[in-house]
Length: 141
Image (cartoon, rainbow, N blue to C red; front, side, top):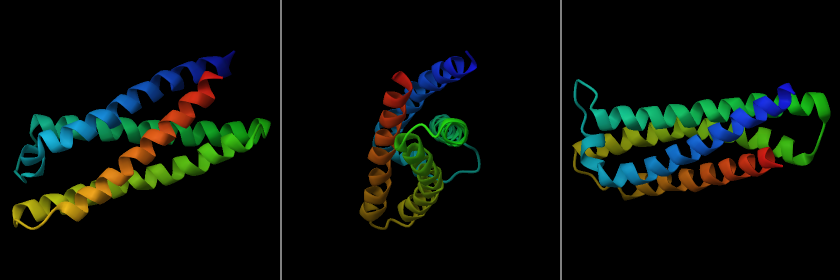
């Protein structure tokens, strides 16, 4: 019974996390100048971006704990092991996102080319979406 409740909440959280990733993918190019301007106070757009990244981070950490617990208890399948390993990788990628956005902001301030940073940033997003899809499929079964 407890496993079903956890899976139900994690499934809902996977949908929210996927929406947050898609929102970030749209938010960054549309509000690029508002996000990348370094100011003393945080703007509402920067706060929304931060909230979305925190949502994705909490989802990834939850999947890591869910996968580790599930592997320990059941040794169910290679899929759970794969989800656990990929969740570690996506947690590391969240910190990479933060670093790339900081470097992108610095490049924007000094009017340097930002193309390479944007490529790196947008390589992270599809990987996160793939992870969210795998978790959602596993939880739906």
